[in-house]
Length: 420
Image 1: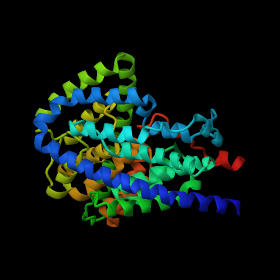
Image 2 (image 1 turned 60 degrees about the vertical axis):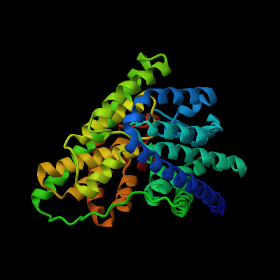
Image 3 (image 1 turned 90 degrees about the vertical axis):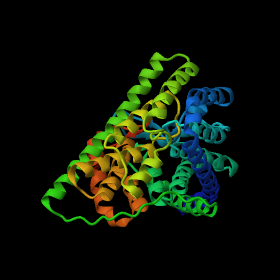
Image 4 (image 1 turned 135 degrees about the vertical axis):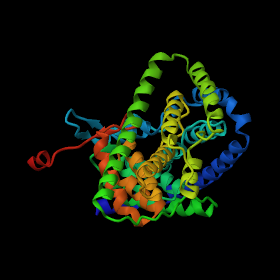
């Protein structure tokens, strides 16, 4: 009875969180659409100021809320309790002692993301909104005086953010349940996350925001050759996602050790990156990568090296402080890798591209269920089996690497579980 009451309370608050995040996701998505179009039209005038935009971003964070620079790793730190040497959760409730999200978190994240994408940074958008969702969930627990549910409401906020921004409520829900720790799902947040994600998706639509969705032809003859090539593709996508996670982690460590002045670091890197981004294919690799995705799915236009260049530009931009998110760039990298694989092997481009989108994203984030459902919701259920196989293989190839440095690994053998 007690658990039912807790679920009901959290679900009612999650409904409010979903509505709020639906408005935020919808309006933010519309703003980003406008910014993307403006940059595409005037990239020669805007991209040269990428370094100056970096200085503005660093100033905003240092002036108003230094702790707000942290991304989803802050949400993970807040969510998790102590973990013992065996990787087992020792005290889940202690996470609340970390404290509350900074009050300026949402405003600063949205402003910084709009600034960096306006001037062509090769970064994402979903990280910002997911972080805002976690903060809104935390705010809601304070407003409704329900701090004991703060962890559940935070996950409901993340679920609502991704559900509203991408139009993928199931994918957003499962991401919120599994991104914090590999090997477990936070089932306490299942119903609230489901409610908040669908609410946000509907409200974002009412705001006039329409995220990208593509229908693909998933028909493929089940021949030994095709099965072999699909497995090879999944392994390749898993390796790309793993390399992205490792490259991002290592580059951040090196950057932190070598650069003492964040203003100088982001300005110098921004100026150098601006030159490359501006003149390599006319700003093709600027922004979130949605233009790359649309070009491949709608027109079949791509270069075989698109995935490699987008990979490098994204890692560098995020490393030096243009941290808008990784999900959309990862989907773009996966789409380009899938298209390249299709060209090399003659496999259907739509199917290979969709598989690349979800498998690279799943590998880099070290998640399994979320990318499968995101694939179904973005590209249709006809390819569900292919997405599942590709994500499972990519997840295995990943080897527990993740773009989230605070992500915990709580994987235990069945034998150790049964012994208890």
